[in-house]
Structure formats: structure tokens, C-alpha cells
Length: 139
Image (cartoon, rainbow, N blue to C red):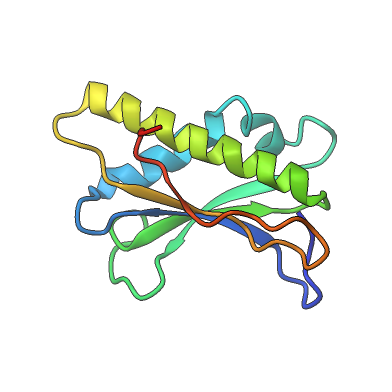
């Protein structure tokens, strides 16, 4: 959760499958993550400062509406933290996406869209982060 040398914030990208996503899925998942117990205090700034922001952005190379298909969710890390803390946050995001998919499956017809969670790039001095996780509910 550091600003890079060029001032960029580290991010975790949450991409929903553009072939199966409904317009309401992106905003529903964003709201779910904002209320997720491991993430909510960080978005509100309960510890004195807001540590992350959850945004909807246009997906790279995908046409669509501002809040639907063609969008992705980006977790923007606003404060400084070591790579192990970033990895922990990444795990909380993956768990939150899995919980959302299970909930959506129980309250709406059809399968929820496939979701991929991309970890933030790791610092050169830190432990290497594994690649993207499929948050499909499979263990």
C-alpha cells in the first residue's frame, strides 16, 4: 500500500467475466466488498485514516456502461504497508468475492459471472506474490 516512485497507488483488480456479467453484478459486488468485515473498516477510515478506496472503472479494452458490463472493480491501496499486509488484504478481497458469488447464487437465478482477482504488483524488495486468483468458489 505504497505510492510507487511515480506516485501511483498499488491496486488489486477484480475483473468479472464480460461474457456472463449482468449490469447489476459490478455494482452489487462493489457494495458487497465495501461491507465485507475485513475491508469495511479500511474503507471508512476507522483507524484514523482511510486505507483503501473501492472504485468501478472501465475494463481495459472493454466497451460498456459506467456501472455494468465493460467495467471492473479496483481496490486502491492508499497507505504504506509491507508486502505481507498487502497479501493479507488480497486474501480478504478473494474471500469477499467468493462470499458474494455464493450469495448471488442463492438469491438470483443462474450462475454468477466468473471473477478473477489480480494481486497488486509486489515491491522489488518484497516476497514474490502469486498470480491472479479465480474466485469461483472452488477450493
